[in-house]
Length: 484
Image (tube, rainbow, N blue to C red; front, side, top):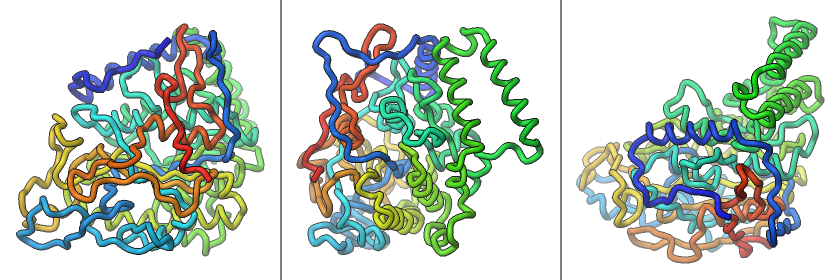
């Protein structure tokens, strides 16, 4: 029995259509009954032995251009009058501490930890027609192409549900760096920052500003502990007495109450200290402090040390900001490299020094890559959204990867049993820079991550009398070659 999906070739007209259909899925999730492990007939799930206890996803939100980051190609510097179709990379390649792996200029710190990494250069995404970041980010985070008839859980929610928390007081799923208010496409972002049908108990503990994370585990300053406890008790009673239809199904309501209990318990737990970056030695704090993302990496390290199961740290998706480079791409990526290079490398070193890297899977990924010429993949009907349309370079804003490219992107993995200093897959040396060897789909990449964490990719829950799988239709296959 298959979970109904939205075929990628069907027309998808607008963001409004996306939201309307996701709203229907959310309503269905609220009304759904208790999700139970699916075990019908011959469906027997055998979980692999876990290679990691914790997963940290470092999310480059907005489309990280592989040719300007982890997969350098032929480089031509900026020059007025230069033909755009000749340019593949806008940064020169640099050596790493692995002879057969090169990165691009600006990633000198990452270059020195590549001997701990597996680099996948052949990650591919489907052609979803008109490219919306929200659709591709939903697909990457849940493994399902939206819209769905049931709200699909985030990959972190799967881990929270199947594996449970490592430490009782520490939230199993923590999201760092993404605001869900006061940003563009906030409703679309909310659609995949959720546990879906699994229930609120397994959803993300949201910390948009890492330097303020400690405030999330303290009662409001204006309240005494007794007053706060009394208010919590009364609020919980309101939820308990709310009509089932208003608060979702009975299961969803119970899950919400459990999430509230978990959050309240954290307030007085020793693990709350891990949220306080003021307790970090100044030298360490300053090393990470390249901005919100860098401090997010520091917070993730502290929380992983204290027992978090799944952490996502994002550069934050805001339309036309950060990695969403529709113009002035070179200068924007140069700035972003300064924000991500040192913190990622330091996170790997710190985990290694603390003896945690072997049992922590760190994944650096994005929803797709970018190209200077091609939108989507060759032959795609996707609308060109570049704001720097020109045949020749006239000014610096034209220099950079301004179009979405889904034919070949890069994923960097550390720890969690992956090979060290290993390169998997490749893309073409000339445009189109599509994956030419060992392509890895979203389903197979998820299966690989689940495999490292000890979860079978065909794990399924019975929801609305049909199975919903951890990877689409349970068909994701882990890339076993990347493991040592």
